[in-house]
Length: 251
Image (cartoon, rainbow, N blue to C red; front, side):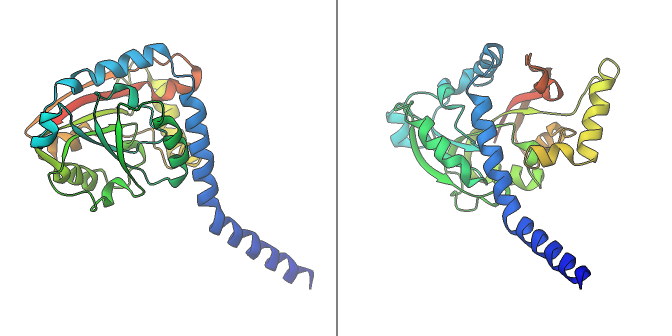
């Protein structure tokens, strides 16, 4: 009889984990990202300013927004809203994120930036944002998003769909180690943590061994400017995500 009790207990535990674990992990990840964003490195901030430096010169496809010298931005994987400070005054902002537990942090953060008009927080994945109208967006932004997207090619097709003709896609992503001769140790650690699923478990599906440049180049943009580089992250926790990719692609 004791074996039956053991089996029943095991089934109950598995059921509870299956029912609630995904939500608990998303809550933990949102809280972790909020904590880490409170103390962003100065060098990192300068680098992001460079990535978004030309946003202020973008011109909207919408006549009314052009009159107001404003643009409409869609940020995919917005998280807590750490990019508000890089957006031009008057920006109309639509955001997409699959994690509903980011919204409270996002709402709290956006109060600090009254110059940005936050229009909508859409809880969905990058591959399934059909509710964003075709050709309605001037600029799409992603930062550290591709690492956890299930289908990057479908995501890129969605980005092309929502961008207005001539619209821009600004991206800054961490990627797999690209200089394996100088940094073979980092490459091996990235491979191990991704292959075993340890990194994905800790960081809500994020993978360390992706490089999305080829997918971006083949997606159908008229122009792609991109650079692989090492992000100036000094904290030891972030050494595995120093290899990075930044750039702008135009529809």
